[in-house]
Amino acid sequence: MSHRALPLNTHFTDIGPLVYGCMALGGDWGGGPLTEADIAQAHAAVEAALDIGVKLFDHADIYRRGKAEAVFGELLKRNPGLRARVRLQSKCGIRFADDVNVGRFDLSAAYIEDSVNGILQRLGVEQIDILLLHRPDALMEPAEVAHAFTRLKAAGKVAHLGVSNMHAGQMGWLQTALSEPLVVNQLELSLAKLDAIDAGTAFNDPQAATRPGAIGWAGTLEYAQRHGVQLQAWGSLAQGRFNDPASSAAAQVVHETAEAHRTTPNAVLLAWLLRHPAGIQPVIGSGNAERIRACADATRIQLSREEWYRLYVTARGERLP
Ligand SMILES: NC(=O)c1ccc[n+]([C@@H]2O[C@H](COP(=O)([O-])OP(=O)(O)OC[C@H]3O[C@@H](n4cnc5c(N)ncnc54)[C@H](OP(=O)(O)O)[C@@H]3O)[C@@H](O)[C@H]2O)c1
Image (cartoon, rainbow, N blue to C red; front, side, top):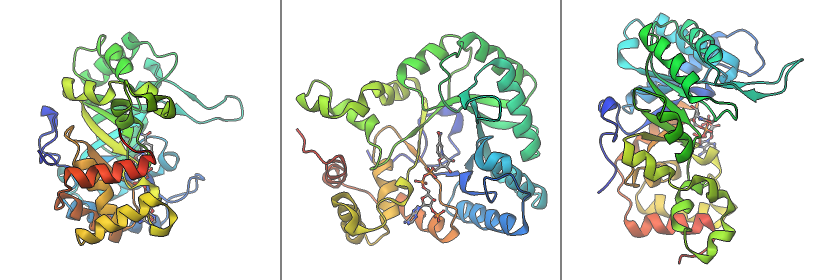
């Protein structure tokens, strides 16, 4: 099986394999007003994403301290046809430190509902398609999350609920309180962040002790596939870390593979994710229109099993078995 044309999740059969992440849109993180240059950059990036077939646009209330959503809202306002062409996903639950409080996670019902109102206001829409709980909150109570989601759904503000950065145990526990299935789990996953894959290959192997990052991830990919939770990979371009072939053995192999397929290193990084049978959707975080367009190649490339493993083993820096 190669990368799937459709996600596993039956709610979103029209979304396609690539998602665009909007964290690079909206200018600085400092809280200044949006500029026309910010709007032009966002417009170019969104057009490039649409050109390569992206439908789902990933946000979070915290990106650029609200300005990523605000600039997208401005694009929606200026382009009346745009809303019908996109699906909108956003996240809540991270609270930055301020003069009084430390940085923290907050999945209380009141905070979730307040956050969604802010998201809708900045985007200038009445509903988002998917709300993700951005990170696990140590004080999370599933019944409270369920209460908030029920109210948001009844009000027509959120269509579906998903999570981000949660392991299998957390997903299963939360699901017990919900009357609807969780539809997405967005995790950091790339050749630079292999924990989710290592969790499977290191099990019952003496090398497990050398893969401590993988421990908490046990069963996470399996849970998602078994329950139809669409996996999304953030950091899918490894934040540019394989850009220079001389920087590491893994970067060298990424570049060699790109040459063999007559494509770019970024397309290889995405194709590596798409080759996994879980139907993982890479979330592309580049704010550069040209780089976004070049990502289209990822859906054209078919990595062989041997190429996939060569990339994986070189990136993990330790042989198998
Ligand atoms: N759920 C979560 O906790 C979470 C956390 C972080 C991000 N996200 C989501 O995932 C999306 C992607 O995440 P990400 O931004 O961390 O990862 P990414 O897509 O791996 O990296 C994007 C960054 O890498 C740079 N880059 C990519 N290819 C490059 C190359 N060949 N040479 C030089 N620089 C290169 C981009 O610069 P240019 O812009 O100049 O191309 C950009 O700064 C975000 O937009 C957001 O929607 C989710």
